[in-house]
Image (tube, rainbow over all chains, first blue to last red):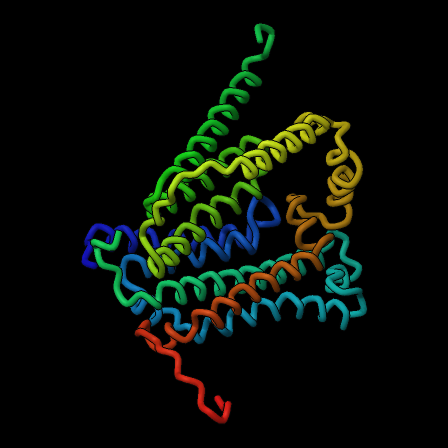
Length: 146
Length: 201
């Protein structure tokens, strides 16, 4: 797997894709997008890396153990936000309890941002985990396999 | 057709060409036996559907379709193809009158059902009238975020989205349990140990 052009293009694209994922993540209140799409785009950057440099190289950047933690942490982040609103005296996922008395519904903004972050983390880790598990079983993809 | 305004005609033309492309891609996917080409065509199908959703003003759905359908699914299908076969087994063509009758019947029922649907963009349609209108009116006052889709997804239906995140998590867990052993050992061939006689792991 020695494709110079692919490697150079991947190196060029990698950071902009991550940046775009972050934009989609935090701009979800204002435009199309949100945690789910952002998580997928974030994972796609690493999948692109894995496609051109091999899964083992990507595993050194993002180890599978970190992804296991990310999957669980994302889900816990979401349900934790729900628990937080209950502890603050509201109902489950009633974000207004985070900032009571705010005239601009800041609580809603904080709550949406928190749960979207949880969704993004969970989706990105899960997608990359699934890819690792599919791609990790084939030791090397030969050119003639296509 | 003569008194149709230009933007409407252009929209109709775009919609029709997109739908034609979808149909053609689907037919080619049915005919082809080379799985790599089929996977690539399914990615193209997702991308064309995403364009169609944009034409229907459903940008959030289009975004998801483009990212998930054309992006991740294609790669995962390729990974799945590498684990199995590169080519679909040739199937002897045979006539199946019962299957044909069922397909024609179901298709006719679906088309008959679609006759009752309100026209696209009809403001008296139930989707635009009761609950949808309610969300559009209440979001600026109660949630104060500009994107109503996000408000519905993350706040009004936050509990649903929590369930969806759990579904994603469970899907990942399933893949780990089914395929995990091989990749934990660096992708080497895994042979299952024969069960020990006393039934212990």
